[in-house]
Length: 263
Length: 349
Image 1 (cartoon, chains in turn cyan, green):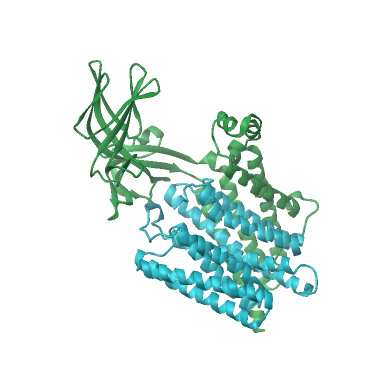
Image 2 (cartoon, chains in turn yellow, blue):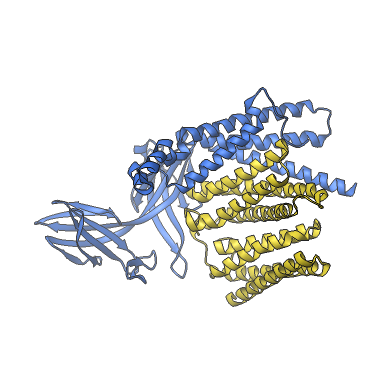
């Protein structure tokens, strides 16, 4: 079972890498074939990854929500799905190189720290685990998609495509608003669970603190967008910076500032 | 229409610019506080950051940032600002009497979400003053002694167990207790990780556990009985101390250091180090029932038993915090359901 899981996840990484290559070709040629190939390969990668995660769930006897390795896989899957949504539904294929770079990077790092599914330690034996991690995947996936849209916004800049720019601002805002709601739920579910497990709903643990910093950054963006009219390159840079904070919260805190969230 | 209320020039609490400045300040403060070790002694900062930066950190309160007056003041400003904003939204909601229902519901949902965040933040500020936690270590057959800490009940530990998976890793830590009031058993309860005990406004958590080591140490003809937690020391005369560490399933790890393969007492050993004037003089390994020689005498490890570490907590503001969680979640759910419905209607229309 473990070997099957490894095989599916390895194939998923290859499919994402091929999708990234197709996306880079699209950036160069702007052709419909490379655009379609990107989405097909990305979808294939997502399907293979789901199969790998199902194998892991069967092998471990639980949902794959318990370690950094599993969370990286889920984050990559969430970003891959948001890539498909943004590129296909909103007809924004230019976003694919940025987002697939994130997906491939997450999957590559996950492959380095891969380990078999282990049973849950006592602190993780709670139904809050599912809610907390699932809301985090939705939030982070949306922030990744918004970062991709912001990157496209910055790449287009001023010029012939100025008419499309307000649409990009609005799309990015909607993605951030969606992600912010789920990030709020991540913090709430985490706090309720921490109260049950550790007797303290907030203890300024590094992971908690950086989740709050992420929340403050996006709260700043939403209020600046709505009440102060922040649009354009300034807002786009803030969105990109926000996603850098997301990545630090996920990886930087785990590697550099360990605390009670170290699993 | 669904956005923040218009800027109010007269009231700084309603100024979005000031609000943005405060949350940017808090984000920066939290970043610094997460990178600078908190609650260490002053000498630590002088040693690690140098005399100038170290003194600056202590002077600015960055060593206790989350309790610093400027941090609490920023939090308090947010509470007041969100309170003013929520009030303004509530007034707008009333004035929208003739407006379409979705406009009124949108204002209400945002007001609920802001009120929820306000409650969470307010209880976070008050927490250090209202929250009380005590930690007790109790062996099987022992009483927690909560009456000494002015709690209205006490706990008698019937049994403490560590369940393990087949590979030896811990599965659950469980304490079976009798809750006693005025010497009478009110109920028998199980405390485990993620399963605290709640009784009369107090919550008891499975916080920690360890081993008590019992034995005697003989020096200069005098024998002293001890029962101490593993990892602590027996103070002896002449500037000596005997440090003991219990390993329930003793083995050497890959680096040759003492470790335990599992939490179960399959191969119990006590690793001891005798210090004289702060310097290690001798060390060794002893099994229960064995006599280990020391320079002036000997050590006899008689036995060991587990103890459970319980956290006993009272937090009167917790219901308000949870109310804040509920209001925030409800407000967000209502707001986004409304937006989704509006998007679907505009698509179908």
